[in-house]
Amino acid sequence: GQDRVYNFAAGPACIPENVLKQAQEELLNYRGSGRSVLELSHRSKLFEGILADAQSSLRKLLNIPDNYKILFFQGGGTGQFAAVPLNLMGLSPSKSADYIVTGNWSQKAAEEAAKYGKVNIVCDTKATKYTEVPSRDQWKLNPDASYVYYCANETVYGVEFQEQFDSTIPIVCDASSNFLSRQLDVSKLGVLYAGAQKNSGTSGVTVVIIREDLIKTPLPETPTVLSYKIFAENNSLYNTPPTYPIYIAQLVYRWLLDLGGLPEMERINVEKSKAVYDVIDSSDFYRCPVKKDSRSRMNVVFRLPDTDLEKKFLEEAGKRNMVELNGHRSVGGIRVSLYNSMPLEPTNMLADFMREFMDKHK
Ligand code: PMP
Image (cartoon, rainbow, N blue to C red; front, side):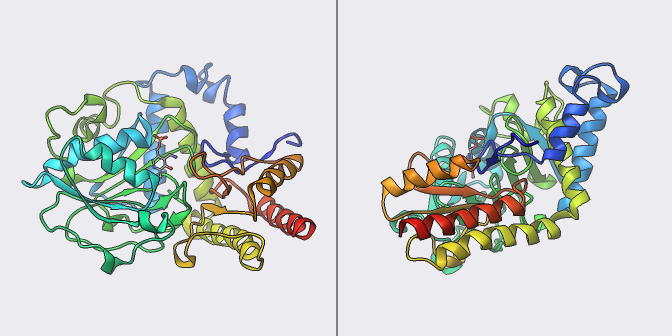
């Protein structure tokens, strides 16, 4: 509608308008049930249908092999910071894990994991102020580790792995902020998880995709609500799941399939991020601290010549209904989040605005 803003938030973020409309249409009476999805029992046939469709749509989108399970958790990405070590530390006798630290979120994950096992920080790009993906020869993996952990897209610093890597030990990937934004070979991963509130719906549900042979008995202190084993055995219905966020995710998966799946989504996302990076790179006014080969397509971060101009930039953008462009509170500056649901057209409008603002203030 006319009164909606262009929401460049880092998450919870915008949701495709068609998905919101469908949710609105179905809000009071879901498929003749006389009630909302908000009011459906998680044991009902209708909700079972939603869950099954979410799983099969996601399997189709990512070509998820048959020997992987799709699970739905509460507790967000932060819950998974604990769930990963609790469930996987015991995979090897060393009870140790390798962590690749490329920013805020992998750092937090490593700290949480250290409560439950031995954490090897195999590399840490802090000295670069988290402005790059370390090249493969900069980190040495331990062959006796239970798993190696990395964050595919660093939401705060705007750093994204452009390629997957190989490893003899299982790879755990936090894909919270680039999930379904590009093609991905799931078979290279042991575990992938992603909170839905950025690329695939709203907050409250976190998807875990896990290779079956890694579902083992977790550490004894593992809370039931974080147990991969119990959730796998009960198809994510051990207790009440976040029913409405799963429904919204299901609608987003279908929206992605209708659009042409991940190849098409990736093509659009490349075009969107290029529109903004091109303005930055063709100017002396905007400055992106991230190394070119490590730049995120999802979270484009940049600075202006001074913080007063940054404040003015945010104000002027706001007058044009472009909102939530401020950087993470820990770093400041500007952050443009271009998740799947942000269309190309408003992204181009933002790029035009950036050019205008520069011409006026440089
Ligand atoms: N991982 C990444 C990459 C994130 O961006 C975030 C949150 N922005 C988290 C984990 C933590 O997720 P949550 O807030 O759902 O706990």
